[in-house]
Amino acid sequence: MCFKINHKHIVKLRFLVLPIFIVILFACATFPQKTYEETVAQWNSYKVADKWMQYNFRYDFKRVKPSERPGPRTPEETFKLKSGVCFDSAHFLKDVLNRIDPSYEAKVVIVKVSPFPTFVHDVVCSFKKEGKLFIMMQYGLNNKLTGVNGPFNSLDEFKNYYQSNSPRTKEGMKVERVISKE
Image (cartoon, rainbow, N blue to C red; front, side, top):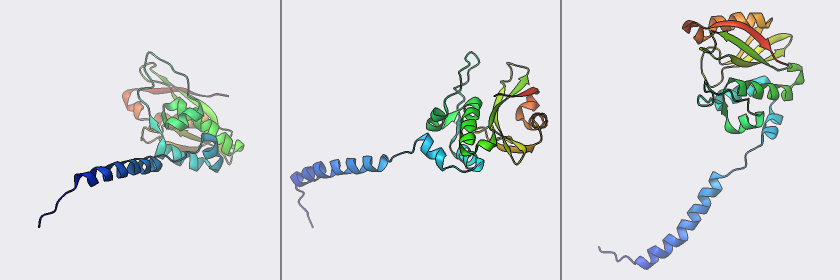
């Protein structure tokens, strides 16, 4: 059997199908994304914020350079970029947790370490739940401290926990003090 191919019909078909394919492709690829405010307004617990951080946030190693000290991104920027460093995630979580439930009294906490600058200070987020202190930290690094830690009775108790569980302790890092901002 021999079929005769009519090239005119193929060319016409190609010009008809290609634009339709492109329209469908872009229609599928673009979907409305909720804003930071819209998304956080639907969150009802620190557990939802923790889950979002676990699945979405990536640590941006390029963001911290020894010669530069950038300030924290806004919570909206961190949400949009889904990346940052410890102080970005701490400020993001403080804002999120206080929006979810002001009784969390979320704060940014600085873990001062030595020797500095061999080791960089860590910045985490604390919050209260039923009179106990919890710490959210280390997102994007996937170590023993990643996520929600606690409950603790005080920042001193957290300091001892951090010193005992930080992977940097094996490299000679010591926690000098833990300071709550605001």
